[in-house]
Amino acid sequence: MTVRAAAALRSADLILCEDTRVTARLLAALGIAGRTLWPLHEHNEDARIAAVLARLREGQRVALVSDAGTPLVSDPGYRLVRAAIAAGLAVAALPGANAAVLALVLSGLPPLPFLALGFPPPRTAARRAAFARLRAAEQAGLAATLIWYEAPHRAAETLADLALIFGADRPAALARELTKRFEEVRRRPLGALAAAAAETPPRGEVTLLVGPPPAAPPDAADLDTALRAALAGASVKQAVAEVSAATGLPRRVVYARALALSAPGPR
Image 1 (cartoon, one colour):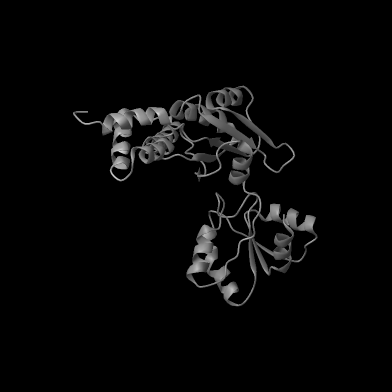
Image 2 (cartoon, one colour):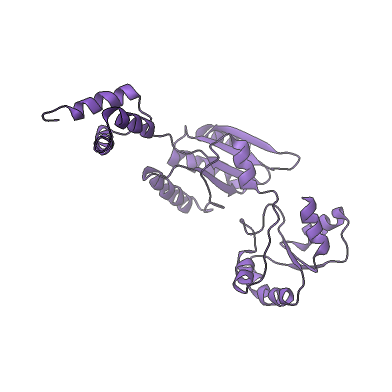
């Protein structure tokens, strides 16, 4: 907890909790007493909104707390926050621990761009279909580190499905119990991570990360298209520099093809 977040809880007239028992222990640890606690979770959020907005209109301060991580991010609160914004009421957020971002920082995988996807489908067929759609997006140009939350008892089978769809050699990481006593980050290719999780199932809250696909060198047709476009408005030297930087191909390879395309006669 940051000092600012603790101060917000001390000044709150009402605290909305994913689980009042969990938040009560937090308040006790911070020495905060006498606060009104209301449960706010997936099943009662819509029913709570009108009463919460009424309190805000009266000038009361309302705090929203989730059991772990950040409210709204795979936790309750989105519908309430959206309603408060629509009603023209002030909303502030106090930064705190977030498993997706912490796992990204610790993973050793490229940090930007990243795509946080929440929990994958629990059933195998739906999960593989969801992963296949992402793989198709990668083949169309998506290149980002992918992040999921997962229940520990499903981590091994989910990693196996990731290895099946994205490839066993894809760089990946499994992070668990972040910011807690048994924090651990395993950094291995997907296939090795899946095998390790099957042998020693992880415990606690799990975050899975898959690195972006390796950049595939363009085929000859792609290279020719890029060179023709560059040569239309630049010298051979400039065009080679631009295309080499864009494709990652050695300059000598690009230069040789540029000379062939610039030469008179059929190509």
